[in-house]
View 1 (cartoon, rainbow, N blue to C red):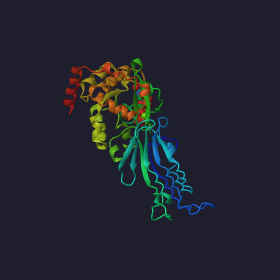
View 2 (view 1 turned 135 degrees about the vertical axis):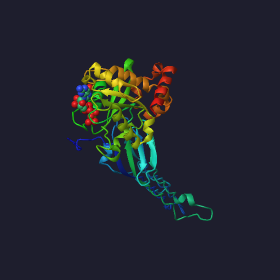
View 3 (view 1 turned 90 degrees about the horizontal axis):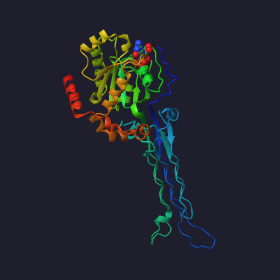
View 4 (view 1 turned 90 degrees about the vertical axis):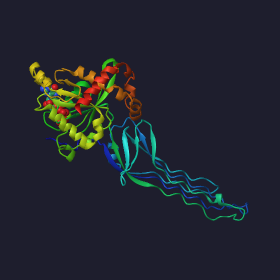
Length: 381
Ligand SMILES: Nc1nc2c(ncn2[C@@H]2O[C@H](COP(=O)(O)OP(=O)(O)OP(=O)(O)O)[C@@H](O)[C@H]2O)c(=O)[nH]1
Ligand SMILES: [Mg+2]
């Protein structure tokens, strides 16, 4: 099984040390000029130390640019000068990250913030303020203060940056289920496809063109196996990429021994990872249906299938692909998903909005249809 790690530049987790700049010291200068007796204090303020700032940038898709740049320091502020001149501020350091980057304190594991939008800037560490020059400390009784404030110290922190890809539909399935084949059939993405397990080692995103210029984004993630939550196979670390998908597409091959059982195993692994993932809407694609004839298909239909909307597909012949896209689109635009549309937009920023015409409303389901679906859901649990 070729597991060529070195070729991978998909980096979705980095630990970096950051340090802001120290504030410059205030000056203690005394004015001394030839014809100016008793010049008095004229020391200027120190400059501010540079901030460490994180900025969302839609041109970045991974954190690979930070992998070999793990120490980031902003400049210190300069000291104040004579004639009340203020020291130069230290330059801020701006760290560009992809939209969807989560920032945590490495020591405490505390979630600090999340960068979701292009251009969004958050100050991670403030630079120290510059100290005041002696000029500020004149009083009627102390006309020549020979002291000034030091600059504030810098701040430092090691942070963990984690990337959560933002896609509408997350693919869930065992290795070899045909996930990557589907993504290459319905989008312009060209993930690697092969008849061995764990071909996909890193997530791929594909933009799916639907009818009338509408589109949605599908995330192809590595296969999941039983025990993945205990670290088997590639484990479950990639699941964080589907935590925010609004819909999960389960993919189970038509030649599977027991579709329902396979579904249960997948479901169980997801639950081990994060029970909230199960709140998402689910759709089932029975893949490789070109291996079936009508009769076999009927048998599968009659068997105990999971109680979620399903469709037979073949990414090879194109069978059921349009039906699948329609189904995904309908499910994505269901009332329950639309409720969080505002939130979604916030999360996505202009990540894909530029390519997503926002006229999804006319394909909303009728109330009867939603109710039917609700009943189906109930049956299952
Ligand atoms: N007959 C048939 N074979 C398919 C179909 N879709 C995928 N395959 C084959 O199934 C194998 C696995 O396909 P992949 O798309 O790489 O599967 P995957 O789910 O991405 O697998 P991992 O990346 O390893 O998790 C390949 O040999 C594909 O050619 C299909 O619709 N019909
Ligand atoms: Mg794959």
